[in-house]
Length: 89
Image 1 (cartoon, rainbow, N blue to C red):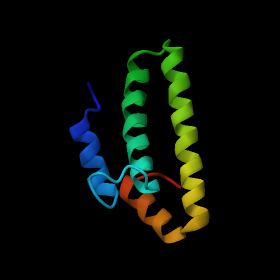
Image 2 (cartoon, one colour):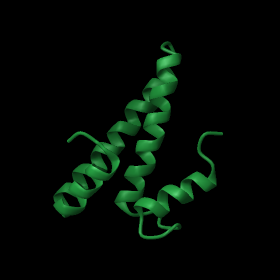
Image 3 (spheres, rainbow, N blue to C red):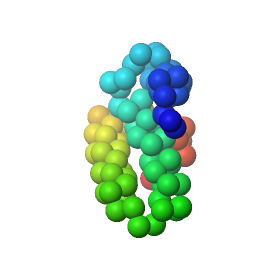
């Protein structure tokens, strides 16, 4: 499996406040970004997989909504997250 509990703990530890910090915006966006990159690679190999394509679009929308929330609340945390994840904004 591409996303096991050890990988989640690593992501939450890197971008969140602690290894168990699953609720912060930064950790959620980082997890979504990891899942988006995995699904993007899957879509490159399986172009006709419409179910996965729909799931990918939904994840991108969720990440966009969280980024919009973070930008409205704290612009410095937003800029730091965009830089850390390498998102183009």
